[in-house]
Amino acid sequence: MPLYQSLADDHFENIFSEFTSIKGNNRQFLKSPFSDEIEIESSLSRLNGDDRNNVLSRLSQFYRDLSKVDINDSAYWSNLYADIVNSLENKRDEGGLLNSYKEFNKFSSTKRLYHEIKKDIGDFEDQINPLELFVPKIVTPRIIDQGIKNQKGLFMFVPFVYNYGFEESGSQVALNSDEVQKRTQTRINILRLLSDSIDPQPKPMAFVIPHCKKASIRSELESVGIMESFIYPDPSHIAHEISKTY
Image (cartoon, rainbow, N blue to C red):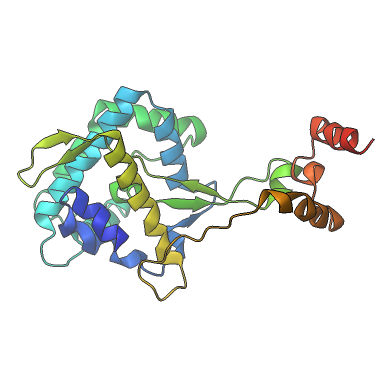
């Protein structure tokens, strides 16, 4: 439901069939830090504002082109992209999607995105799947120090939301900050597909810790070895912890 709502916000309901494979498929959401998709999205964040908006604008144009073709619950793009990746001569092109993809790829801001990607991946091919940039990701961190290892945390990649939406007529309209925030939260809610809950719209769970309980909780954590110097095992935090005791 959140995925359908997110697509409906921009009248892209017809491409919903392209995403049905992610239902129950954790690999679509759970990514390693070495994933090409993560490299692409982190590189997108390094572009300047104009280039990033231009790429997002071209993405929206691709979604609109795809929406005109996807009308029979068929995953046309998934088939075509597989043919592109496999370099097949006779590609299963429907409605000129291949031309739309080529236009996206040769756009100047997209080329600058590829340049950023190649700073990290030297042999990266100049082709990405535009639909992969729509859904949020959960990323396991690179274990670069003891602190990251001890924290046992995960990162969340939230998709960029284009600052302009589209009306049913196809005309473009600027979104206010509240609408951008709402659409961003709707994208994040797509991660509920990972939930084991039978409720299609499970409510986020909140834990409120009373101020008076914080000291006793910290004491319990310290008794099992979880303290400031465990989470942040650098000299300054170790020194700060010692200074509190002595």
